[in-house]
Image (cartoon, rainbow, N blue to C red; front, side):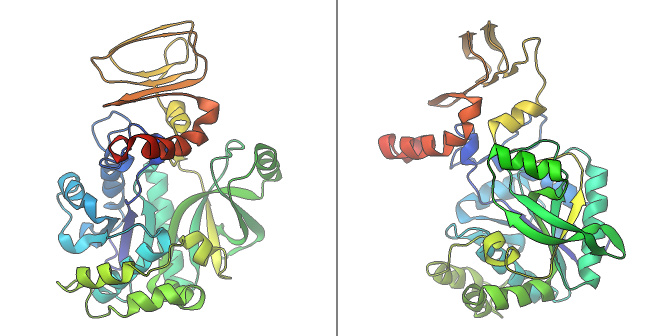
Length: 363
């Protein structure tokens, strides 16, 4: 196992699209969402332990989740926690993690991945990440993972690649032409039919040298803030410094701030049974269905003339559904959601409305 390999797991989101199961106090990355005995962050950590030493895995999360991370990942030390005092999107948290790792090992090559994705073909995934880390170790590039699309999904961003320009040592790693945000269904169909586009998995790999160069070029205002803390990282003075600079740090994603601007971005075209588990619809596709194609979690649920629904209710709650087609029905604590699957992209707005009308305790 290469001691220069590091992993940064991003675990700071609140998973609003999985509301009401995912709530601010327990976001989806800390939930056994598949019902198999381990949470999503535990699956992610155990996956990357096969790629790099456990002590080289860093967890980026909000400071309010420190205790739950340490409970679910008891092998993690305080030094491996990258605790954000506020949410500032992905570029600042990556810059923060970069500087912590640099103080330990300036020769590090790093994979950055979300904590809440599903990987069905783990052996293929591990092979892709190891080959990707080798590529960024020997090439000055910023590498992202692109998933070969199986359908015109409008919930994902897309990456157009140049099939004529690839790394000689790995013909699955292509130059990137353009990043595209979540498209309309019609445009997504065109993307898939063209064969030139991949789903953006939000998994990145780079050497510290390459990513520091990119930050200095494209996000100097972010980089300069964190650079002031050199010598403070991994010491008792780190957290007071971070609390100070996060108050003025720019809120910006790594995609928009760096990846869409850099000229040395490449994409690894892969297929390892990936899902970002971003919506109830994506979970519906993965769960077992009954004879009416309903995916049900709950011991006392009766359905009549109801089809293609996803139901997630407490095990002792008696629930009777009649005449529902393609619905999401979820109860968690004091919140009940009933929503058409086709309208699930509106759940973020519903959460915002509930917060305004009834307060933070329900979100």
